[in-house]
Length: 360
Image 1 (cartoon, rainbow, N blue to C red):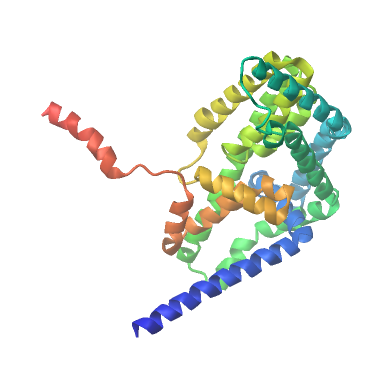
Image 2: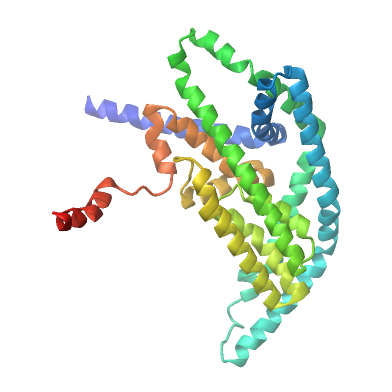
């Protein structure tokens, strides 16, 4: 019997892995449809709190949705107007930046060899290629621009999602038979997602604005472009702020020299530490974090499956899955594995025991 049970468990594991592979392959094949839909869902979740606030103020649903959609359109057109020319100019000047960065690398290698450091056999230019980082940013921006070319489809999807948002709980009550207790987990999950997205969007906007202002002060080219990049990548904890800083610092090296580049990097560090480590944790609820390893793996996974836009949405998608797992008792253990480091109660109690002994 034990052998039969083990065979059944092994078969179930293999079937689960095979199903996962099939689902991932299907997601990748449907990338052209899924990416606009995910962007629309992302925008709709951010737009839902203003919509519900307008409805509580007495506006009819159609008028509240119209106001929210007009606001989204105004913000999108403003961003396109401010950043569109910067993206085009940056893509045009990219070969120039790559050439000058390679020249800077050659100067640094010559300087190191003067002090006896032999770097000729280390293939430094292949291991550390600053042009590759610039190309990655250009690919990311161009990929996002290609998706936003389907702006009408995304906008219409947002409208229909917002139309269904207010009536979906009533539908779910009807499906589940009406008891309020059956909706507790769903309500907790939805409120956590809205809370996370609202707080993260607010502080990402603050991060991008401060970065743009700092780069204008230092004198780095394309400050609005780097501010937009800092806003988008701030949804990726820890790693995103580093990725957002790299192209701006490289441009500063080419344009202003190493001293101003160091000042630029220092500004990024101060802004990200102030917002990400001091202010944001005070407003972000418990259980809404991810371990650094999970952040990095989700960035690679969703970027591979969904392309550049998948990299931007990697952490929101993963944190949403974590919230869904955390909303049920039988799957909470998986949410704990995805979360950050937990300080055990025993270690906490051990730190307090000497104090209690001294008091006695």
